Image 1: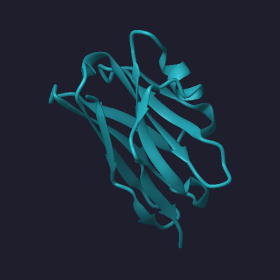
Image 2 (image 1 turned 30 degrees about the vertical axis):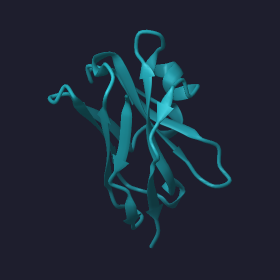
Image 3 (image 1 turned 90 degrees about the horizontal axis):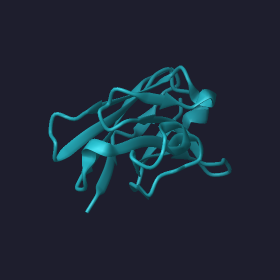
Image 4 (image 1 turned 60 degrees about the vertical axis):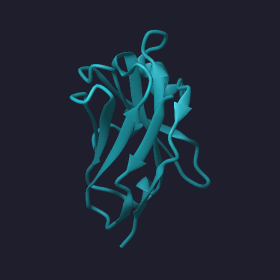
Amino acid sequence: QLQLAESGGGVVQPGGSLRLSCAVSGGYLDYMFIGWFREAPGKEREGISCVSGSGQTTYDVDSVKGRFTISRDNRDKSKNLVFLQIDNLKSEDTGVYFCAAANGATTTLRHMCVNFGYFQRGQGTQVTVSS
């Protein structure tokens, strides 16, 4: 059974950085796309960045391009790690960040990120940007 568990959130001052982690286990991970999304009260859910099963291909959503970097560590075949590096944090980045999984054989990274084409998500980790 696929499991996704996020960590790394916290309270950060504007201009600071964070690296979020998503531990993915269970299922056939080689073809599993993983993406990062966020949601905040009063705002629509937003896709950030998605990565292929190999970690070689990524898709970044235009609206948040520039300060977010996704990466994937597949060295442990039973438990992949997908990271989201966030730099120069701003107050509008406050929200719950969650990772989600999609079947890479039946979708594209763009569809996953832009149209929320995933079948399972994690609980999320809170990021608060405040001085």
